[in-house]
Each structure stands twice: as structure tokens, then as C-alpha cells.
Length: 47
Image (cartoon, rainbow, N blue to C red; front, side, top):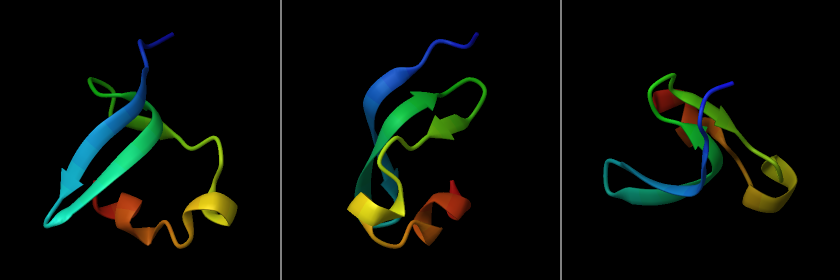
């Protein structure tokens, strides 16, 4: 199981987003709340 960081800060262009659970080496993100809480999550596709 990869090591996950909770509430990982990631900058995408001029935007700053927080990923619920992020395994940086594997580039795996798990969103616990999903689009219902965060709105549209298409920005994550560019990571």
C-alpha cells in the first residue's frame, strides 16, 4: 500500500488545490468528498 498524504497541497497553474489523499510517488489521488463537495473536478485530470 502506498504512503498517502492527507490534504496535500498541489499547485496547478495559478490554482491551488488540496487533495484528500495523495500518494505522490505513484501519482494516485483519492477524493473522499468528490464533486458534491468540491464542485467540478476536471482540474485534477491535468495533474
